[in-house]
Image (cartoon, rainbow, N blue to C red; front, side, top):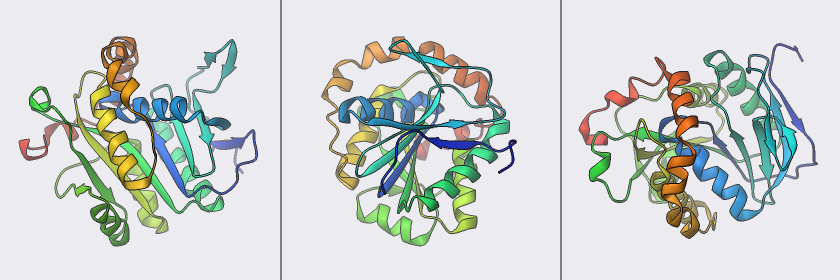
Length: 248
């Protein structure tokens, strides 16, 4: 494998997982918050990390231990990939290619990418809705059968767009779930809606009570990450924020 490509490193043997869930900082930090809470709530084990050639020289420290900001966690049903730092645009294609290839090698049956979709009237929405995009007709039928409304018109940008494109090209099953969210602020309430949708549709069984109770704490704690994420996304996600009010 070329050293120019990302390398997914497994630090623990990962048995076959049915679902793979992807979350990277973007609109409202919805995926990052939802998956972070999932990892904590389900006490998922760290099973690997991702090396990216174009990733800035950043490590995160957890319990005194330096770690890659892009890591893998898993249990018997799910494996999740989460990034704790905004990813540079030049990493998107490599990450998409490597993630889909790796998911195929591990026998994952469905990739689920979590993100937010900017809602122009978010302040008026008490319970954000979660829309779905399927890479194939079969995945779209699956999403509808499990209670998600499909996003019929609009845009998707950033790493999700390239992962979606890669899955279409490789005919790999992918569902992109988008929760209505703030575009400029961390949105833990949208993350709650996302987790509730996953609980109902895929048997995730994540308790969202703590996340609901600590929503304001998350908004404050994640403001800096949201600011860095907006800077990173500038120019790549702007079209999503121009969606008509029908989707907000």
